[in-house]
Length: 109
Image (cartoon, one colour):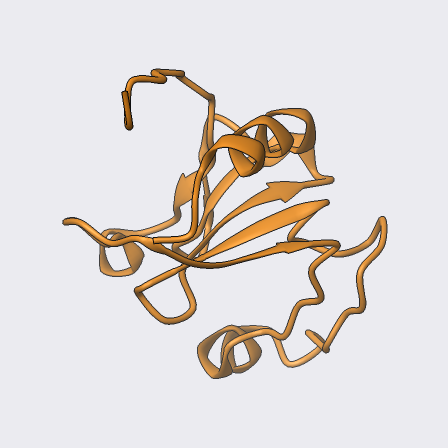
């Protein structure tokens, strides 16, 4: 049955209540080897942030699932210290091995 697969993954969570989204959305796009562009508010807080192509330094890790909420994603991370603590600008970060599993079973829509 659709939606019958139930898995629990450790994640990162937003660093503040203002960055936390609540409610329902859906996956609108999926990408293996995502590139990353910081949002204007991220650059305001840290002017050294720049566009990053896919690769080991990329904050989105190996896979990204873009949500119906603009600038909010479910993605991997190469920085495993972020998992299990408030460390994101709103995104849901997973270990790369686990985002790979979720990516494989989560449909667009």
